[in-house]
Image (cartoon, rainbow, N blue to C red; front, side, top):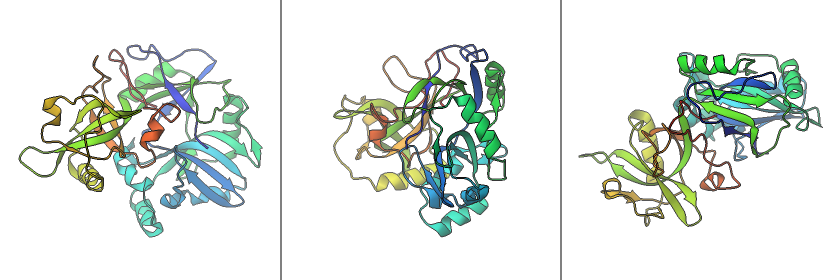
Amino acid sequence: MRPMLATQGPASRGSSGVPRGAEWAHEIKWDGIRLIARVRAGELRLTTRSERDVTVAFPELAGLTDLGHDLVLDGEAVTFVDGVPSFSQLVERVHTTSAAKARLLASSRPTTYLAFDLLGLDGLDLTSLPWSARRAALEEILPDRARWQVSPQYADGQDLFRATAEQGLEGVVSKRVTSTYQQGVRSPDWLKFPHRATESVVIGGWRPETGRARLGSVLVGAPVANGLTFRGRVGSGLAGRAGARLAELIAELPVGPCPFVEEVPRLDREGATWVEPSLVVDVASLGTTPGGRLRQPAYKGWRSDLTPEDLTAGGTTPVGEAPASADGTEA
């Protein structure tokens, strides 16, 4: 199943866009990978937003089968570094297919599963119940352990927004307490208020670092009917291991004609190598320019759980485009 998704909250400065009142509850927006966890007849299955099975990648979550219930949970796998979520430390985990390597990574770089919804319990489908009822059942059924816990919820979203900004967290997700769970739908019943927008985009080309052969920047776009629409050139965030790993992935792509539907500006295309537009990555930015380019983009990580088709209408769509006037990121 595909998870329910949050809609970008209304454009406002600071926390003023976060809804008030008892009809809303608020959660921290974690910088992790969304996973649906199913426990059935003592077996665990973990799937990503695109419904890819990644159970082997997270052996530290196997204990979910010991809770004595068949469950369907929605949550995020998060890797913490010095108490702060680190997507770059997590991304290698989700595409690990070797059980031995997964165990090694789990011991050196463990993840925590932060569950925020209960969709099924002992064969019962709970998705038609209001969020408040599902949340109450989740808190009763799922005891906190070292490798999983119930993601905390807060009544005051304005305070939470300010606190998450101070602590360097991603932002806030606000949920209408009466909302049902709408599989695969980006619903206005869930609103996201990020501190810095994160968007999933597709790599269409790359440029070497000036004077060197190694990766210096990537040219990215959003999928449209006949290719990609250009969103800009991304160089920030490509230093060190993250950039080296991305360079390896790009090297595996077939070289081809320019995949962008409009002419790429000369300053961006100079020295570029065009590649098959199949690699999805996350890019953080300060919103977009009037021309549609990402403002001050920075590479965050490879999305091995997504394909370009997931970003088109009817798929998961790009996440968290913050308006230029907003102080925000994705959820």
